[in-house]
Length: 325
Image (cartoon, rainbow, N blue to C red; front, side, top):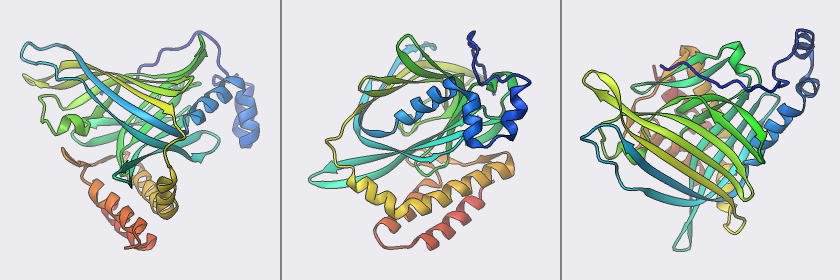
């Protein structure tokens, strides 16, 4: 795996504590610790929390430059929908944002639990994609973690997708976070086509805009070629989140009221699986993503529909996730 590469900012950040301040921070409570970290840390937290809300989202995927003669870039793909983003955890050094699609067709609402992004301040480790359906915990050197945040992205069933580390910048009129190089498995949009590449190496940027925020990706689509990894094509991804209070988020709120405890348990089971093996292996299928997805999502829907209860579904989820290597 490529070692995490972070560009160090020349400006001094309060994430890099002096030898005098560090012991005080370690002994301080959460409120005092936050005060010691100062304005830069608070600006980072505010930017992350600002991404919560109700949005109309557009997903724009464009393959750009091919790097092998035999590869022809596919056509641009644009899709979208209405999405609610909610803060489901917020403590001293960790913020979790849950995305949920709320769609309406023929007067009927459909709720689809979407991805989750976890932010951790000055992380000691980050969970990264290691290829072939495996994720591993990778240490973040102390010099690189100072003042930085990791973003770990989880799939619809809360299984891992990718993780990266970077720093927030608040200048030139924009608050933005940029990751280092980040490996990730194929998304369903590509996996169903069975392309010659089998993973992405990308850089992620999250930036606040006047109307909401944007997630930009600069991806290399990489796969085996003559016994080595090769770049087949570059891809630009532009996911825009524009504030939208017109759509009815009520069905999404109702889904979470019914399934919140179940999903909190599922998140805990995944954390235990990762910690137990210093990573986790979750085989993937082209149509479903992780093989755990259909069952974990289905049990949640059974709770929402009144066909099951939290205790039963939690036991099923624990057994499934616990069976993974």
